[in-house]
Image (cartoon, rainbow, N blue to C red; front, side, top):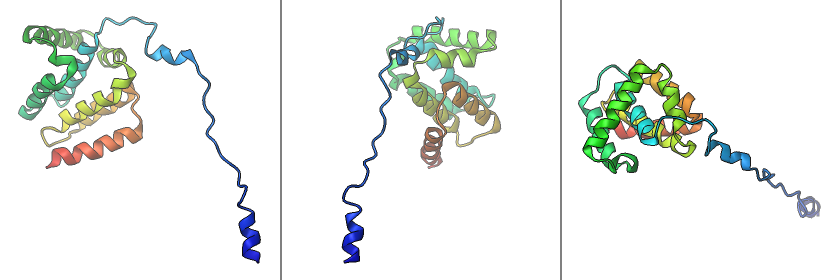
Length: 167
């Protein structure tokens, strides 16, 4: 009988619902930023993936191959003919040389929904040669900060890509 009485207390348990955030057009501010940038999305993308290959001061053969493969797979870069891609590369290298804030500028030129995928591409390129050195880790840490990638997303990507590049 006491079991029946205890079970009766659970008949009308409180319902917990998640509070929905009110609709706000301010969310569009990150998709349509007020400040204008002279970086195009392809320039910013190429700058960051190229910088990941350069992070340790040299570009390994595996990193070069990964960059070339990415240029053929990526919708952003594969639509460019070889001359356009070469011009884009020159622009990116010049901006990296001339602008002290190139990393921040390139990251902020990308739409927020690209941030995680760009980080993953950069991580994959850093790991392509089978090693991770301090300079590459420092670059990736800076990238995480500028792209506002969550720790959980970064941790999961790192786990997956470290296994991928280990074997």
